[in-house]
Length: 578
Image 1 (cartoon, rainbow, N blue to C red):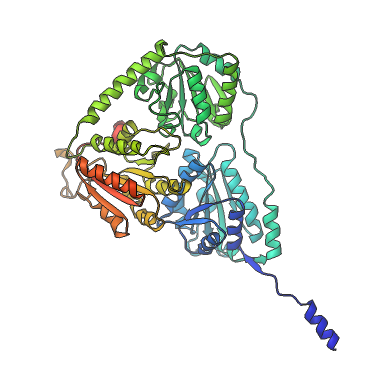
Image 2: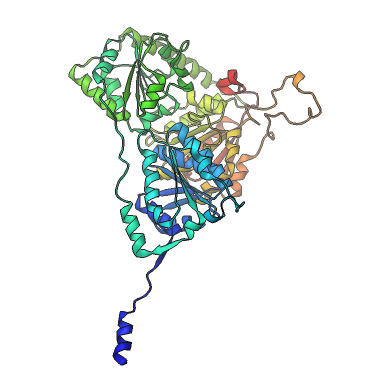
């Protein structure tokens, strides 16, 4: 009997540790290389966030899922890796759609992970119940739902892989509450984690044969060639390949707003200030990583010549099929440019500075820059948009390299900033993008700060744009991010009350105008409420002092710049659409 008792003791072993769904999500993300995650916690995903932190994922908690989603989309663009954000079920998922759709429209890799109601209770009116798979469908490349805890590692890898494969975009992972609470033994968790690491999604570089020789021939024989590039080229890290092509061939170039910085704005071949001449008279346009959408006037007359021949480089065959260019090259922007450079090297050509087309672009560029500088030289107080923008430009340029990352949103603020602020380094400008999204500012700031730790981030915001996500200044302070937010405070959307006399009528005529905010709002005190630094400025010297102090401190700050409410134009440069 004693021997049997001893044998029983020897054979017994402690029960195997159980792993629940929340821990498995966290471990899957960490093993997949996810370094940062954004989001808002609550039922049923709080444990996902806390366990992700324990496994080495830096979780940044937001006040609103929209801003978290915007942060994730910008993070995907800046890093080339999917930005991941976490939401609660139902309304949290719906709020997150703003960021997911922004990623889709800008073609940036992002993954939204949302909790959802228990599977057994779906259809009964459960807490925050929503058919989230149906809700996300219009905005994603791919959506997946875990119906059992063992599926989690594979599906995490799947959504991360699809987000960056081919044309980047948004993906979605649905995690029902019951799946997050399910448990499996540690040995089984280790097995499913290991099995999920077998790669299923390979990076798509290019497909089919590319007529590189024809593309180079078109550029070589063009009388007025132009190279246009956008944020797709920036995402592809194509700046060195672009520089080589432009400086070898001497072809003038035009960046889209977020393509600015891939080549320095100050480069001798830049055509930004001669945009109308460049696109209106070029006969061959090589368009790299930019879509012929509203930002480029659809590539159509009258802004473009009816005879222009487009060479369109895009990762997506569907995009080229849609635009029907003279020549389409499907592939990664950097790879295609490298192939073009190889072809040029075999038989070099260069327009030269004395070429009539280069001289015409240069002449118009210098004329328009001179006009702008004359306007900027005037110190207007109360501030218009140009005087503070020039001071901000000079302060940013004085920082040298690495240049601060600029975040810009608003109507007049963004429009004037695009013309005045200078980008000389790649991926240093984030703005409202393809969709013209307002409210992205603070989310983008947080993404830029964590993607490039220690680098100064400067947001130049209209007061309306700032208002969408202003509470996230608390997030800046909580994580002590190196972000300075400059608010152009002109008292409303486009400015103050711009109604004509005959529009001020009816029973609510004494109400503030639909475009008006509280005059002189003290936005800087919002930052001070959370322990950050606030500045109120209304003169050039006050602004210079605030910029110098805040840039040097490298701590969260809001600079409230009081602007004449009638200085700007309604709807900025898109007045014709309002």
